[in-house]
Each structure stands twice: as C-alpha cells, then as structure tokens.
Amino acid sequence: MQRIGYKILLYILRGLTYFKKALFWLLKIIGDGLFYILNWFRNTIGFRFYKIKFQLEKHAGILKMPWNSKVIELFGKRGTLQIILFIIIFVIAVPHTRLYARDMTKIPGRDTLLYKIVGPGEQDFQLEEVVVNYTATVAKQTNTWEQGTIQVQPRTVSGQNTNQPISISSIALGGTAITKPNIITGANITTGGNGAVREEIIIHNVETGDTIGSIAEKYKLDVNTLLWSNGLTLRSYIRPGDKLKILPTSGLVHKIKKGDTLSKIAKTYSAEANKIIEFNKLKDDGSDLAIGEEIIVPGGKMPQPVYAYNPSTRQYNQLSNISAPPPSASAAAGSGYLWPTSVRRITQYYSWRHTGLDVAGPIGTPLYAAKAGTVIKAGWNARGYGNYVIIDHGSGVQTLYGHATKLFVSAGEQVAQGQTIALMGSTGRSTGPHLHFEVRINGGRMNPLKYIK
Image (tube, rainbow, N blue to C red; front, top):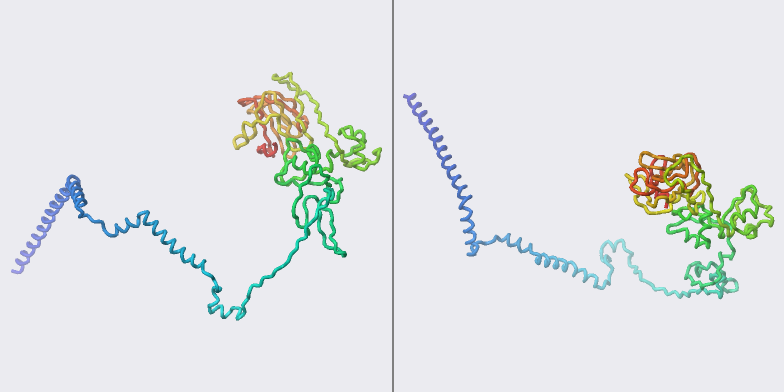
C-alpha cells in the first residue's frame, strides 16, 4: 500500500515538471511575440504618436520644465553671470576703498598683547624735521677755450678758491660732472689735460658700435693711417675686443732695415725727411738710426704693391689673349681675408647642402687671393668645380676658387694677398658665370662670410 502511494507521488511530481516546461515554453512564445510587436510599433507608428502627444502637451501648457533645469537655464545666461561678477567685484572693492580712505590715527598692532609684552614700552618715537641750509658753489668758466674748463678746489689758507684747467669734456664741481659746454666753431682746444701733444703709440680696444671711420675721427687721424698701422684694408672688418694701434699723427710706422736712410724712407713713403727727423727727434744726418727700430713717418703713404705675372706652362683656350687684371686695391700684407672678387652680388649662401658662397658677375671679372699663401692645386676639376684654384694659407686654412674661365697661377706658386689669380667664368657644373668660394679649416668647409666681408 505504501509503495503505491510513492508511485502516485512520483507521477504527480513528473506531471508538475512537464507542466513547468510547457508553461515556460508558452510564456517564451508570448514574450517573443510581444517584443516583436513592440519593436514594430516603436519603429513605425509609435514615434509618430509620441511626437503628436508631445506637441499637444506643449501647446496646451501641460508640459512643465523641472525646477533644477530652470535654475541651470537661469544661471547659464550671460547677463546673469555679468551681474554676479559685478556684485562680487563691488563687495570686494568697497571695504578696501573705505580702508584706504580711513584716517589711520593708530598704528595697527599696538593694541595687541604681544606688542605690550615685547614692544618699546612707554616710549613714543616722534619724527623730527631738520632743516639744512645748503649753498652750492657754482663753477666759473674762464674767458678762453684754450684753458679748458674750471674745477673748484678746496679753499686754501687764504680762503680763496683755486681754479685749475681740466679737460674740456665737462665742467666739474668737486669731481661731479655738471654740464658739457658747446664748443665754438674754430676754437683752439688742447689735445690733453696738460696741453701736451701725444708722441707715443697707444692701444685702442674695439667696443660695440666702433667702426674704422669713427675710431679714426676720435683720434684725429685719417682712415689710411689706422688701416696701415694695423695691417687692415678697406674690405677688412673689426670685432669688439680687437686691439688697434693708434699713432700720434697721420702717417705710418716703418721698421728700420739694413741699408735704410732718411732720404730713402722719405722717398718710399712720399714724406718729408725733415718732418721725420723732427717728430722722431733724430740727428740731421740720420746717423742714430738703428736696425730693428720703429720710427713714425708723419704724412707718409703706403706704396701700392706691384705684382709680377709669372706665366704658367698650362695653356687655356678661352681668353688666352687677356692678361691678368691689376691686384685688388688696398691689399696690405698681413691683413685679414679679402673679398675674393671685384663684384658683390651673392646668388647662393652657405648652407648644409651648399658648402661655399656663390658670387655672380660677368665673365672675365678678376678673382683675388683672399690671403697670401701657396697654390696647391690649379687646373681642371671633374667633380663640378671646373677650372679651380686652391690656396693653402697655413695653420690648416685653405681657400677654393671655382668655375674660373682662365687661371693665372699654377701649383707650387706663392701668391700675395689681393693678387689676381684667375678670371670668373662658368666652367664645370654651373648655370651661369660666377665664383664658387670656399673656406676650409682642417678639411672642414666653413661659412666664408665669417672670414670675408
């Protein structure tokens, strides 16, 4: 009997299990159908119904904005933000304005406990005004410009002021510059504070803004004197920190060599022998001239160098009947680097892909040696330079001159600075007549504009 009861209970449980599965299956079919219907409604006519309902509520006034959205909209307006910013500035500025306008009768902090403990006690420090009668002593100027300006010295025993001439550059009172006088045209002014004429050579340190012309004008010399005494030319340039020799008068310096006489020196430099004797305090016959001694030749002029042309064994077809033009003007020996030609039109500058400087000009324009040296190469270059010259200046410095149409030097020849070494052309890899100029330092190609100007 008990066994039959267990079987009945088992059948009931199995029936419930099948019923649950059937129920889930039925609900899944119904849910899938409803989901399909809802998607179809939303994607077809549902959105249109919602849009119509929204428009009706909007026009009927039923639709209302939440209070937080209204607050955000209010404070998001530009006018509201401007009013808030103005109120903040006003609240900050008004107390400060009242504080600054307040009459401060008490020093802040005096009523604190700390001030009473470590303060100065019962002392009250007051300000005391002191009146000093100061009478300035005015410098007086003399009646003549030759005496320079006046400096007031301390009183002597007799109680009188001692006036002493000083430099014309300013009027001084106790060592303090007051003013600079206007010098009348034609006034006779001494060259130094004691009226003595300078007779020795001095050194001038080049400063920023100095030029050859301004330095020569400062020391009352002509430009050639400054150039000759420092081994410069009109194409040279100076940098701050350079030191230049300044002669006491216009002329030049000559170093005595074996066989030199006063008449020979005067003839060489187109000067007067009596002026040389007078300025250097020599004997009339020049017997006190010493070899190696340097004398100043007043009014002397440096003779122009004359270079002899040594014909090369190499023959050239182009311009074979043209002789070498004269050397570059004012090419003093020992000066800096010269501009290597007589034209100055730069067509291509130095860069990482162009290792030199291109200067354009007509065919036949003379090319000059930028500095004295030895020609190490002169001829044809198959790598694009055409007819070219390389000059070795010593200390690892070399200069190159490319695309020439005619050469006047050969390898091994010594050339002077400014000597005409070639004529400008368009040989090699070139698109027009020009000079390709390079400066090489220890084999590296440098910017030529750092050396020539």
